[in-house]
Amino acid sequence: MYDFDSITDRRGTDSIKWDVDENELPMWVADMDFPTAPEIVNAFSERLNHSVFGYGKLKTEWFNAYINWWKSRHDFEMKKEGLIFCSGVVPGITSIIRHLTAPGDVIIMFSPTYNHFYNCIQDNGRRILDVDLNFSGHDYSIDFKKLEDALGKSDAKLMIICNPQNPTGTVWNRNDFERIGELCAKYSVTIVSDEIHCDIITPGTKYTPFAAVSETCSNNSIICIAPTKAFNLAGLQTSAIYVENKILRKRVSCAIEKDELSMPNSFAASAAIAAFNYGEVWLNELNEYIYKNKMIVNDYLHREIPKIRLIWGDATYLLWLDCTSLNIDSKSLAQRIRKETGLFLMAGSYYGNGGNGFLRMNIACPQTMLLDGLDRLRRGIESINTIE
Image (cartoon, rainbow, N blue to C red; front, side):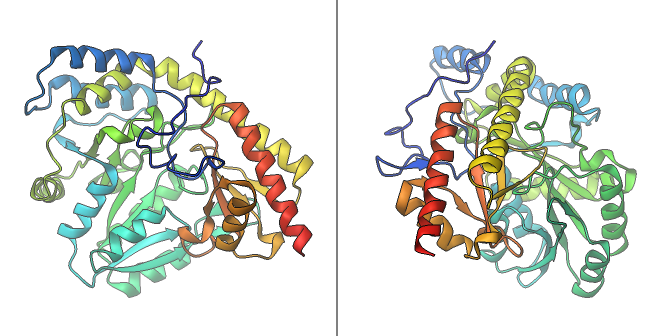
């Protein structure tokens, strides 16, 4: 039994998340407030005790760790030659955009989606074409007519997807991916699938790797994966890119090397090996804890803040909160809550079309901290209602 209840004081540790005022509670960026698995810490200690930190290279164990994890946990067998080390998922996606497209090219995304995708595209002079997801009021689905219209009329080169979806937590199914794969192949658009959140998932739910769906999907996709979200290792700069198509793989590999993203630091490979080889029990318990946190939030909102609804998603530790009944734009809402209570949430408008009126809340924290956050949220909403 692992301890997820104890609070670790992260103030003064150069944490981006906790670079806030003393009275503030940050529940915004996708960074857990749990120490990583002790098995990973032990691997760090062994590497640290070696005391020499020169240039390194990848061992066979690094490849095997990824291959064995995806085969045993996700029923997908990757090929060793298809794996490329990269120092991070976002840097990798940025490099792919820079080298596989040209300035002015169109890149398609579903919306709402992870906000840094917008930065990656716009900062490199490419154009964004959002395909809005259908929102039923309870969940999200893909409008395939809109998607085909966008693919057929835009001369797009890439499509970036989140699997599972951030910020909504949606777990896409095989049928969805099969249709996406066929449409993108039809219009010669390469898929980049960010699958960094795939291991944070409701117990009993299965995520489907995009490349596992069909030969069409595997032949026309670039899959970005990492242990960093599941095991809270983002600061170590470690990830992998999987590309089955040899020609496409060569282009991606050259891009990563040109941008100097292909050399692991002294702890990057050890972290991935330890996480995938020894961290499964810890991860299973973490997912149970996060599920309980989701239920706490859902019950609390029903009972104390009925104007806000949790849009249930079976993946990630990021909750998508529907605040549209308040009739206030999400940036103003987030700012007001932070000013009144110190609770720091992400405004939904950062995630593109359809995000306004929503908030994103990180619940990967001990339950006492979560309850503090919910109490602050309630007080923040009450302050808005008082003004009204």
